[in-house]
Image (tube, rainbow, N blue to C red; front, top):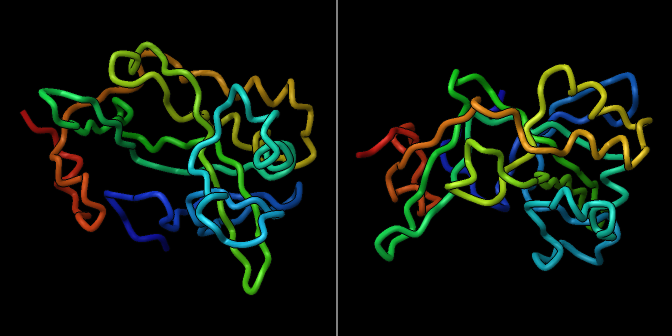
Length: 196
């Protein structure tokens, strides 16, 4: 069972669904910040939390994972920040129906003095719901896409790109929340409540 968290920071462990073969799925805790399998060590200079959809097939750190090691990253919502009155104001983004959203991700297994599972969230251009808040957003998948996205036998980069567009419009909303979210040690349900 995964404990609820309201303020997940990069380098935290997050749950992801993986399908290491075409017949099984499992929930795996992963370091949020992709560490390529060829990295010499667990250096933060290799740790990447996001992968741009537009360049994912061009970057050596992402290309093989995109073709062979894709994952689903569940979340109730996510944060973005906007400069307002010389301060960074956090906003919470979620589905209007408050249902779970699932991000498209990629994962790696690094082996050194220990094994490290790590992942990155794929991002794309924001849809109409969010374009005034931020220019980018996570790629959000629908349930009917999960099986095909996870299937490691699907390795045609052009066909995989069809998953990576902006999310359907009129599904998401956002509102300002407390600046307490700017401190990772703060982690409580009040962080996702709207402020006025």
